[in-house]
Picture 1 (cartoon, rainbow, N blue to C red):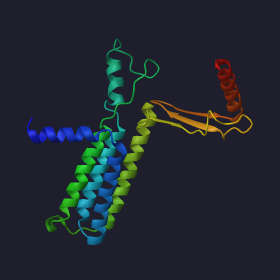
Picture 2 (cartoon, one colour; picture 1 turned 60 degrees about the vertical axis):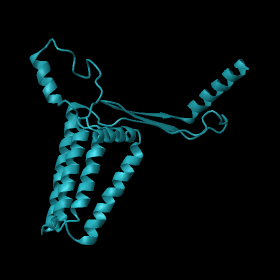
Picture 3 (cartoon, rainbow, N blue to C red; picture 1 turned 30 degrees about the vertical axis):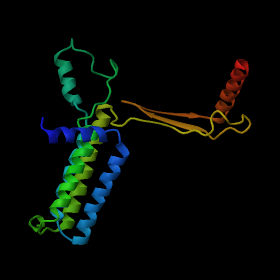
Picture 4 (tube, one colour; picture 1 turned 90 degrees about the vertical axis):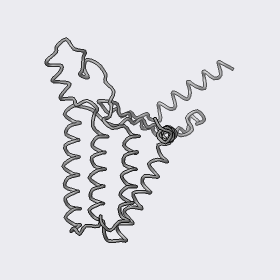
Length: 215
């Protein structure tokens, strides 16, 4: 591995933990590209190519690394294989394209497209409304296929555990906080739980009793 590759790999490793700043930078780059297209009134074919490429990355990001239909066929051919269904064993969702690779390739493509707008050779004459209509049709059809695929094989490509609470340990039992809504999206199901004020009263009273006993 050359010195330049080592420096590049180290830079990528250093950027990996900074998820939000990376995507903010990508959003700024993409917005700059769109402003360039809007103000220059050209390079629509470059914009269309970038949109199709980003859509392809999004599909890979939402797709499992191993196609479930192929796994079902393999299980049918080999009954003695390890369990592959949800009822037999839990399997975490593994993406075909990781979040970092998604950002990296999308960022590179955006910067390259922005650079291409500096060359008149890429400014091909096209009727841009047709490209916009065709892209939205393609986007709708592709997302519909992805959603149907998720429903058929019962997987969710996102993990979300959201907990909202207010002054949990320092609230008076006589004036508890509003209900808490906990939404947990796991591999194959969505669980929604709601904790009401009465539960906060009981829990807070129990905490106070335990605290007094310790003191």
